[in-house]
Length: 122
Image (cartoon, rainbow, N blue to C red; front, side, top):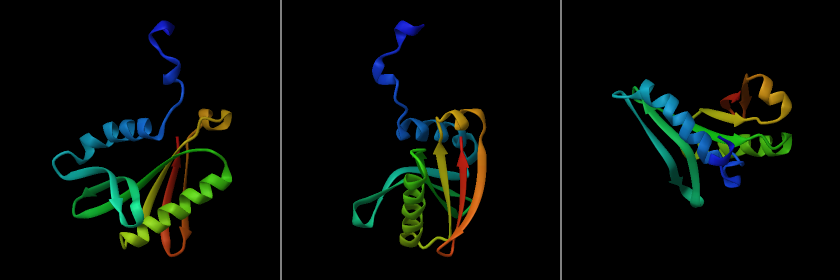
């Protein structure tokens, strides 16, 4: 089995996580909602995933855990996107490959800049 993998397959990219997430969510929204990937908004910025479901829009940002400072930048980035989209709720999916992250998943809700951010580490 080992010979079937390339060294290029070693690194997990955010786009791989996005594909896995969309494979999970597609049966849930099928027929009732839509998913959009890499939506370009103002200032040449792109949203990772936008889902419309039952007349509501959900902005989902995906990040690989690269430490607390990068995490805080990701939260700020999501808040900025929510401002542009005039939404008050957003979602941050964090892929955590650290020893601690590999053992458990966790969730957290954060109120920041008038926004409700739901975060999940997987």
